Image 1 (spheres, rainbow, N blue to C red):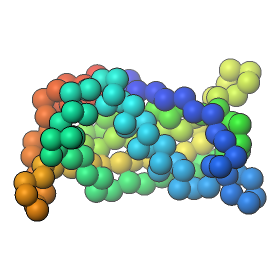
Image 2 (cartoon, rainbow, N blue to C red; image 1 turned 180 degrees about the vertical axis):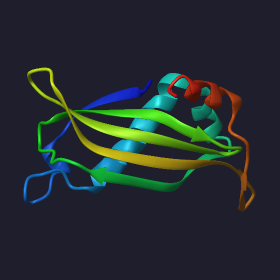
Image 3 (cartoon, rainbow, N blue to C red; image 1 turned 120 degrees about the horizontal axis):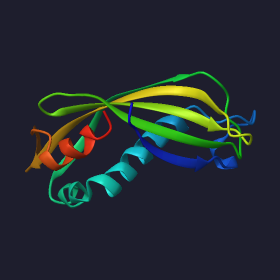
Length: 140
């Protein structure tokens, strides 16, 4: 399976009082990974976002498999699960990168977004832009 990868070094601000990563950060990392994917693979979508196009998150989830701590290095891997007329479903795997080169799967998530367009006060469903569809198919 092909995937888009983003590496991240966890900081203290992402942990809770116990010292492990606070659970909501995984969802934030999904968003960050998705943003960097767009910047690198579909930059024209970024300009469309300023012209009324929107990627609206309609569902997200995360299953936690192992703890993460401050200064753990992780790699979030995003892959395309499926598309429909105006929706995109992506899978996210969170891997802790160990010092010895090993990798440990620490969480698995999923996010579904709808392609929408602002028309006055309304949001209207629109098809997935072709440039985004093409960029995503490389990560199926």
